[in-house]
Length: 272
Image 1 (cartoon, rainbow, N blue to C red):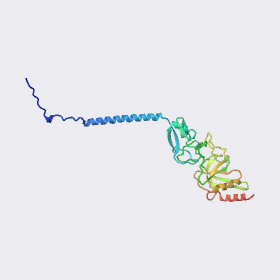
Image 2: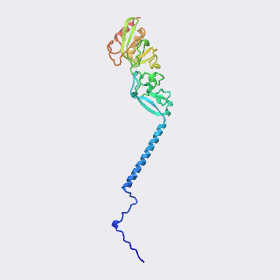
Image 3: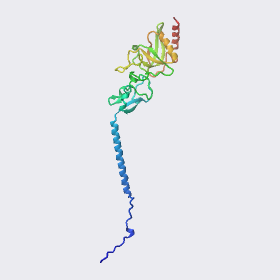
């Protein structure tokens, strides 16, 4: 019987043993790349799902003021900040007068460059009555602390059409028992125009032409002096609209009511 002999392998030529827990460097890179690719796919799917959800949820926009405004200032798009809310919250705001933007309404577009008819503070929600005078939740005019709001009788037909809340005016008066026209005050800011309040704007966005008074702010003593003057004037006060930014007071020295006129009225009041 022929025996086959085997020659033992040279240990130096044997392949190294393979450890069960080890992989080559190339295998590691493949696994890392596969993991990153899978993560990218997951993130894209999450983003697409979130975008679809946002698109399916209808929203509306309300506006708040970025800075305080005064009556007479005109609305600019940069004056407001937009806030978006789910459409489900719109119904509770229906009676607030807030200006809102939805698929069916233009938001502030129809109000741009229109004058505010009353003062408003920073962060106040923008409302329709800021521009039209309709149904406000708060007083239309915020009286400055230490001041009094005084109504002066005027004849709208004799006042320039440029008179709007926020304009600065000179006030004059005629007296039945004293010839001539006297300057009463200069550079006075108009707070409101109208009878009891600023009335609704008409279709042409002009102020009403049938008003019989304007409102101004005075300190308490000036308010009393103005009441004395009003009791002695003939007809209504005469109003001249000043150019914007003109501080000159050429008719009266100093601020406030004409001191010479207060003496005249004092003498008139002393005569029975």
